[in-house]
Length: 362
Image (cartoon, rainbow, N blue to C red; front, side, top):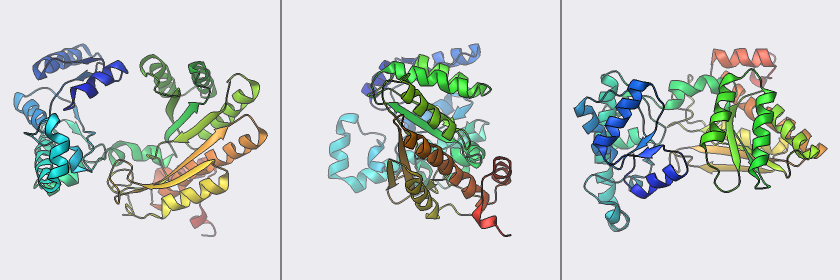
């Protein structure tokens, strides 16, 4: 759903959406039909979520899962009810305070509907864009009654050092990415979910700019993939160097109490030492590019993230750096969650030989 039809049409063109519905009635009919047929199908509809969510609730549409990805951390990026897309920019620039108040009031209506979907039995979560806090400031007191997606689903993966692992073919040749796709699946032959994703990504995800790929890999996996990519470059099976990075959504590189570190077991949601330590270890491990930045989807001042990028250029030195960096980077995630008291992280550390400095000598 989007208030701007042009954005939805662009998503259809890039295959992120299967189709754009004519209106809400058309969207509901098609979605219910797909649900009955147990057929995966994505449908875009033009509308304001602050109006559409309550309307879907009122109609009693059978909905199993509800979330939101609006850039709500900046209320000027959320279109209030009663304001057109054409009026948006000028209104926000000329009367930012009034616009913010109206945006928060609309967010409160949307979040209220989300909570009531949860009351009715749906699975509801926040993507981590601060809409719950903005709705709270808009006057809705139950805004935090549904969780963010990290504590709800992702934290066990973080305990294993898992997160979004990305790579880009500097050649610009899609065949280089297809070569890495095949190599990654051969490297991890028993990872059925990984294989399913890689096949789906090739079929359904359009390249934008330089061809790239992303998947989730953890401690003990990323380093193997990085060295493999370097070997592919060295052998000429890939025609140019590959740049390897990751999302700022990762296991050990973030302090973000509205998303990645929400509801930590030990209450360390806002402790910023971890991304700083992550940046230092990335630097000492041989990363080609290291960053420390604010924001990351939740707004400046509400989080700190550390990023790192490495280059597989086929050299012996690159292989050494990749092995070290792509071990230590997710390793910091395991250590961070051991320190917070997660038993799963402790088991992973013991099984995979992750050193936990704060436990040594104890």
